[in-house]
Amino acid sequence: MDGLPIVKRFLDYVDSERNFSAHTVRSYSADLTQFCQFLAALETPAADEELLSTDNLPAVDELPLDSLAERLPAVSPTEIRAYLAMMRNSDYSKSTIARKLATLRSFYKFMV
Picture 1: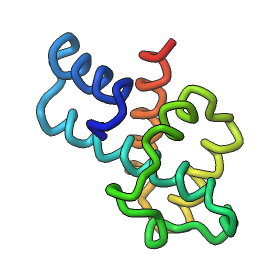
Picture 2 (picture 1 turned 135 degrees about the vertical axis):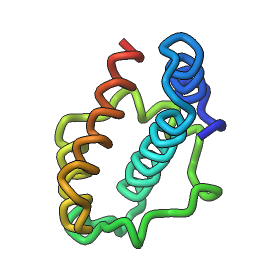
Picture 3 (picture 1 turned 120 degrees about the vertical axis):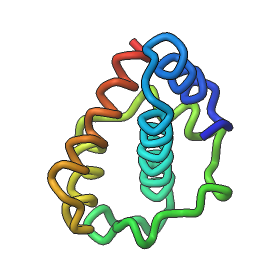
Picture 4 (picture 1 turned 30 degrees about the horizontal axis):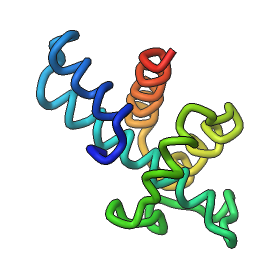
């Protein structure tokens, strides 16, 4: 997600200031990329939250970066719950879901 300045700043922060491992930084990047894909999928006219799965998220190179830059700071708790539901429906393990939620928590804490 190098195309979004706030995400890049966050990843630089956890890498250089928090000294997270390279593996953790890559995981955070992947988690935020997937979350951005989910948000972009919600924006499509035919999107049905209940039918969204990780299999039908838009490709990374198709993400509307300008729209996401505005959208990320304004995400609602309902949208995060829908993201968690999508992961549960896609058979993610509880530990993976917890890690992805921790990534979002850290990211939004950084934004504040």
